[in-house]
Structures are given as structure tokens and as C-alpha cells.
Image (cartoon, rainbow, N blue to C red; front, side):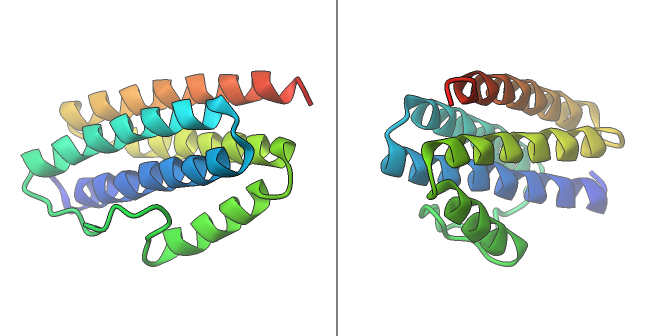
Length: 143
């Protein structure tokens, strides 16, 4: 694969971990089952990207799977999103929407120039993010 595709895979692995970690924290704070359920889904997304990294012999840069452990840009984004979500359940659900919109945007952009196997996995991730976005939107109607 190209160096750009390599970067795409590494970026998406971190972005999926970001989503999972934020949702784990928000579930611990608010106890809303949507966060637990979608965190589990984000773990499956991380595993799907990891399978591609393994296929192409690309080491995962973060071997520490601890919630909230990031380096670089994702550390700041994690802190910002987790903090926003601590204000109220409604704010937490808005953070969920924000994360999924970011995922969809990134995936659509990155799918344009990838090999078919990467495109297939990214398409799967995009479909999941669209489902998550609809779920967060439905929960927000309660508030």
C-alpha cells in the first residue's frame, strides 16, 4: 500500500480508539446504555483496522490500550471531547454526534484513494458511524 494509505490506517485506528474511549468514560459518568453499546462497536471497528495493519505489517503505534491514553493530536481531542461530555447527559450525547460526524467525514475523504480491501473496511466503518449518528440523534430527542 502507499504511504498515504498507511497513514490513513494509522489515523483511523486512533480515531476509532478515541470514540471508544470517550464513550467508555461517558458511560461510566452517565450510565446511558447507548455509550456502552457503541463503545463495544467502536472496539470492533478498532479490530477491523488492526486486521488491515497486521495484513500490511504495520505496527500499531500505541500498544497501550488504556482508556484515554493517546499521543499527539488525539490526546488533546480526547481531553476536549471527554470534558464537554461531563457537563450533562445531553452534552454527552452531543459529543457522540460530534465524534460520529468527524468519523464519517474522515472516512469519506480517505476512501477515495485506497485499495479495495481498505475501502471495504472503511465503508463498513462509515456505515457503523452513520448508524451511531442516528442512534445519538434519537436519544437527543428525549432532551
